[in-house]
Structure formats: C-alpha cells, structure tokens
Amino acid sequence: MAKIHKQIIVKGKVQGVYFRASTKQTAELLGITGQVKNLPDGSVWIAAESEAAAMEAFIAWCRQGPPHAVVSALELTDAPVQHYTKFEVVH
Image (cartoon, rainbow, N blue to C red; front, side, top):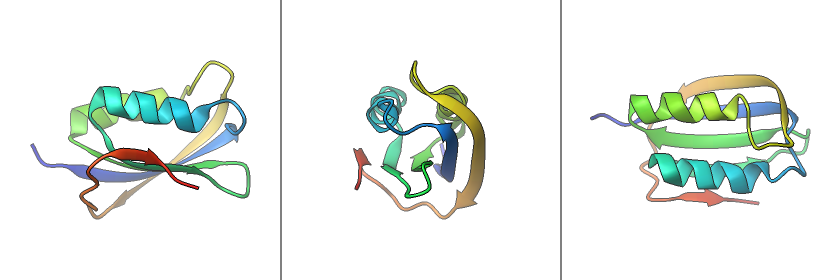
C-alpha cells in the first residue's frame, strides 16, 4: 500500500487537554508515523503518514480529540511523504 502524507491543523480548545500525548498514542495504535506540536496561535499541527484507511481513521479521531478537547475546525493539506520512522511530540 502506498503511504500518503497529510498536514493537519486542529483548531479549538486543543492545548492543555493532553491533545499531543493522545495524538501520539492514537497514531501509534493506527500505525501512523509523523509529528505533532502546539502552535503559538493555540492550535495543534500534525504531520501524519500512513496508508489511506489508517489515515481516514486518524483524521476521524482528530475531529474529536481526547475527552476534554473541543475541536472547532480541521485544516487538511496533502504534502510529499517525508518517510518518518516513528510518531513523536516535538516542541
């Protein structure tokens, strides 16, 4: 299966609610590689790579986030595959 790469910006109440840690845990369960970090404007940036089916499940999770998150919008962008080997929280 071919890998795809999505850049995802998650907006809403997504900082201070364990969004990054939960994203890493969910990504690892789904076999997704990439990175997640907080942005200065209060949103969360995610770079994710996987096959299409896992990516669909991951994006669906991102629309909800962890229990205390309130996701108001998701911005999805296709990008070239970066060949990440793991999923990590970056600062």
